[in-house]
Image (cartoon, rainbow, N blue to C red):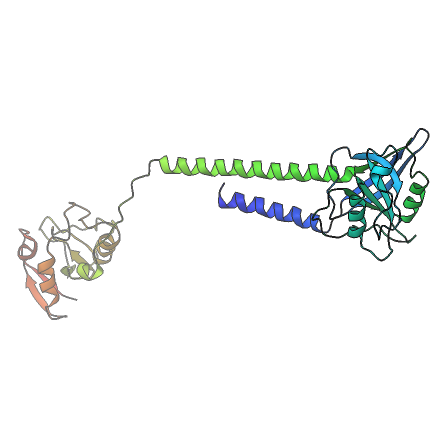
Length: 324
């Protein structure tokens, strides 16, 4: 599972844990007899084992003393038909819930039902330490406890302590949600792993070689001339081959090593941004850099007679060039 899937599962588990922190486990105490059936809401003790499955069944007996703040006199092995005795205990008496349940367990009872001693009291989870506690324990209201006293010691009625349906439904929903989330994380992981493998196995397209044109300094070092008329050198035409515009008298032309001439602005842009060869004959314009470097050292603004055959090997007549 990748980092994203693990993080999602951890967030979900944390969220579910936070929901369950302040939540108490509810239960029901059900009395079933030949002609009576009573149900009482209850809250499980936090320190006692949780009630699972269909619940536990037993016979109810009244604790002696009823507050269980001292050792119980009526031990379970001395009670008649006490195969699974439950102890009914009242709250208060100067001892804690945990002490009451431990004394009931020591006396041999299988469960402890503690009822409130206040009529307007709310059902609260009984707190305590769980070490050594093996019997179930629930807390009911004062009204429920007083009604249960009427059936204490009756062997012809059964007392059931069952977990609340809401708890079971909540647990099923939580498990289903976590399972769905885990399955989603696994599927997402498989998808991303497969996608990564496909990308690795896919042939990569060859990289396009980047174009590096001539530098502006080198281009401007090439000889240039001021157009006056068409020359009979087979290299100077009436029209620029790049922009297809006719030359006008006084325009600046750039001379390439192949002796072809173009508008200076047109061919400068061509050589620095597009290609490094002549647009007409395809000859590389970078073949005479040494001669062009010497030309840069000539005084600016001076006029000189240069033979194009000296620079580029052109078999033409002499032209007047003014370096600008």
